[in-house]
Image 1 (cartoon, rainbow, N blue to C red):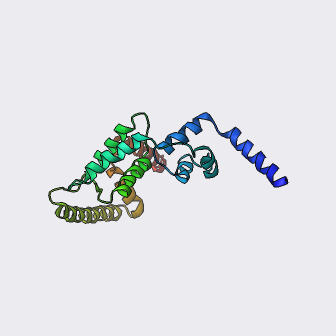
Image 2 (image 1 turned 135 degrees about the horizontal axis):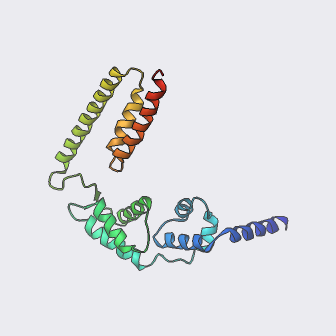
Image 3 (image 1 turned 90 degrees about the horizontal axis):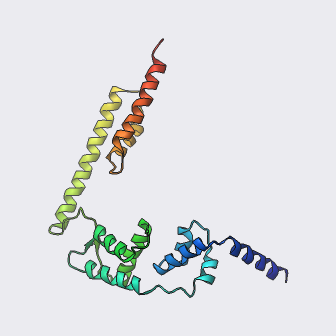
Length: 203
């Protein structure tokens, strides 16, 4: 009796904390094909797996998802497969009213693979006319780039022995990222350097 009463209080408390916005997000994610644990994780644990099982069991995945998967599979089963970029475009075109995360896009691509094992999703840097040759060349370029960066780090640290090689390498790699705002990062570093120079220069 006590256990049943306590469980009732917990369920009531949980219901009171669930907002309409959370419910709508959970329903939308379920319709996209996510599992209950994935939905709970996506919502940072705001809704438990048990709650989702109780409240979303009647939510259908819908025809839109099936059409999306069918279109993906048609492209992905071609001899050249489909690029991840193109596949994501297809997925987003079928979900114009939703803002899908990278994990959700990957999940839908994986669903297409599970539905048809011939599905192939490739990065755009792989050549469709000479895939193995392009891969071998890419690997060689990666090794060459690593060697060049290590050389730069060594030359820099030889010139400035009080600097950290790992920190120098990290900073160099940060500037290689496409999203890196080089000018803003350098401007911030320049201001810090000017302040440091003033502190270390005898009055």
